[in-house]
Length: 112
Length: 115
Image (cartoon, helix red, strand yellow):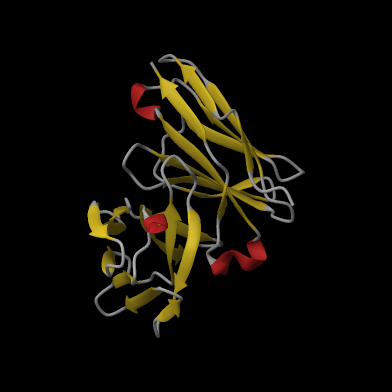
């Protein structure tokens, strides 16, 4: 079983739509959770961390459900520039250092 | 402030050959991790270097090896290349003291094609 699983999409939505991505993780000892964004043929970049109480950054809202081992990302009022692949990332504490596990990514296409 | 730099950006090798990829971390960072990203997949963790030692390793065979130098730069070596090694190889740097922030800074990657 993969450490992190995501719906690969693609999600094709019109501008202005609200879209939600989900992610599940298998290691109940996971400690830190993140969403990264990766544009086509570019490197991943941190979009936002995910906190237990949920957190918001502008049009983006992240939620964490530890009991269900589930993470979500909600994007409101989608822009063309939001088109990218969104990677769910989970970190578990190794003996000395954090290890980061990436999902396969969910592709978002925002259409005019 | 220079970000993470990787070289070469693209390279083509044949099966059985060996390859060395290079990475210079972001200024002020001391930890380097390497990831393999196959087409349509998320990055897969290969290994992590800190203080010139391999600290963590993912599920990759011994054909994959690395090194970290005193200036924190790093190399990834892959021996006996297979077709399945074709991928984007990403280097990510971080500062150990802030590793819990989760912000890995990635280079643009080295795209390896094995023929």
